[in-house]
Length: 111
Image (tube, rainbow, N blue to C red; front, side, top):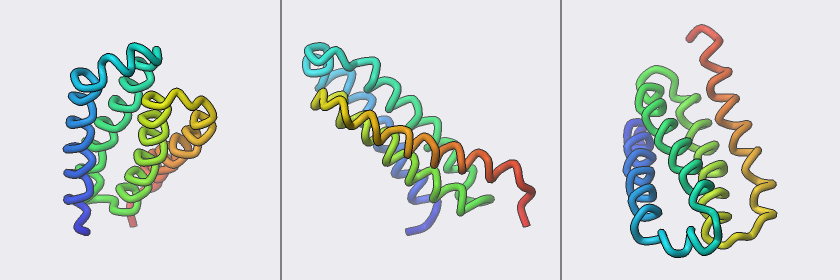
């Protein structure tokens, strides 16, 4: 899959999931008390979608690390928000670590 396609898919699904959470899942998230968790997932998802678009042309390794990090970080939060299965929160930091690794790699000059 081309790198720009991966970044575009992250952005597309970030917007779609944000809208779905705000409208289609409003009652479920309210009942579970997890609307803020969903919002956090969408925020990190969309931030890394935009950053991934930049990285797709300049730092492809960073892009793929951010894709994996977003899937694990935001994905675990999405599932937690829908199911209220709290142990899923233990997976979230793995995704956060991947997001941090991607940002850390940007500290090194590109070869």
